[in-house]
Length: 456
Image 1 (cartoon, one colour):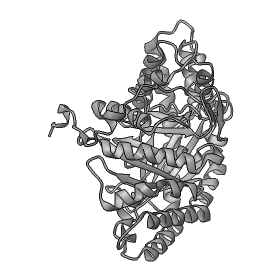
Image 2 (cartoon, one colour):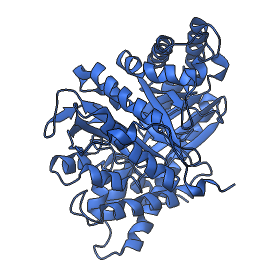
Image 3 (tube, rainbow, N blue to C red):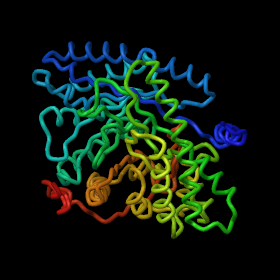
Image 4 (tube, rainbow, N blue to C red):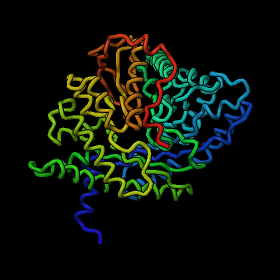
C-alpha cells in the first residue's frame, strides 16, 4: 500500500527541491546512412532522425502532464559522425560541416534541445574521416545552434593519443575564437574524453555507440536539491555512515522515478528502453547545487579541505542506491561538478575558494572531469593540451570516464566573468598555471596504457 508520507515526500522533492528528469535522450544509429555521395548521406540522416524522433518532444510533454514530473531536456544522440561521413568519396572538413548543419536542422525540426554525436573515437590513432571531422569542429559549432561535439582521445586499454590531445587543444581555441561574440559558446559544446561512455544521455558528450541498438531511449535523472534537503533534515550528530545511507535511500527514490518515466516514454515511442544514468547534475538555480550537498555534510564551502572526500562518498552512495532501483544503469552515473552550471561552484570560484588544482583533484572521484571552466582567452594551446593530458591520465589510470570541457574566453582575463545563460550558467575566468608544458605535449605519439590494462 502506498503510504501518505511517501506521496508527500515525492511531491516535496518535485515542488521544493528541484527533482526532475534532467534529460530523455533518444539514441539513433546512423550506420545505415553511409554513402559515397555527401548529399545522399545528409538526406538519409535528416529523414531518419525526423522519422524516429518526430514524437519525442510531444510524448515527453504528455508524460510531464500525466505524472507532474518535469522533463527538462529532450535530446538526440547519434552514431559518431566520423564513422558515417568517411564513407563519402574524398571526404573533407567541408563535408562534415554540411553533415553538422543537417543534424542541427533535423534537431530544430523535431524540437529537441541538443543533438550529440558529432564525434570521433581516436584513442589509438586517426583515420582520414576522423581527421576531417576534427578539423571541421570549430566551423561546425559556430554555424549551428543545437549541435554538440565530443572526441575520445584515450582509454585505459589503449593509452592516450597525444597527437589527438594537441589537435583537440587547437580545436578548442579555434571554436572559442569563432564564437567570441558569445563568449566562446562553441567551446562550451565541445568535450574531450577518456573512456567515453557509449550510452551517455548527457551533453555535450552523448553519442550512440557502435554496440548500441537501432534506436533506444536513455534517461538522465537529477536531484542534488533533494539530497541536500535530506541531509539537512538529519540529526546534526548523525555520523557519516548514516549520511551515506540517507543518500542511498534518496538515490533509490530518484532512480525509481526516472525508471518509471523512461520506460513509459520508450513504450509510447515503441523503442527499447536503454539505460538510466544516475548522475546528480546541478543547475545554476538556487538549491540545485552539488556544492550545496558538501555544505550540508559540514564543509564550509566547496574547495575546503575535505571536499574531495565528500564528493567521493556522495558519488559512491548515489551509485549504490540507484543501482538497486534499475537493472540497466549506464552512462556516467555519479555526481557532476561543472563550474558554470552549479550555483555553489560558481560562488566558490568567484571567491577563490576553489582552484583549478582542487578541481582536478576532485575529478579523480567524480562522474566526469573538468567541466564548464572558463579560462583566459590567451591561454596557450600547449597549456590547454597539458590540462587535457592530465585529466585523461586520471581517467586512464583509474579506469573511469574523465573529460575536459574548457572555454578560453577571447578578450577576457582572470577576475572577469562570462555569462552563457540558461543551464550553462555563468563563471569567473579561472587562473591556470603559467608554466610551460610545450615540449612535452609536442613530443606526440601515445602515452602507453598502464600495466593493469593487460587483464584479459
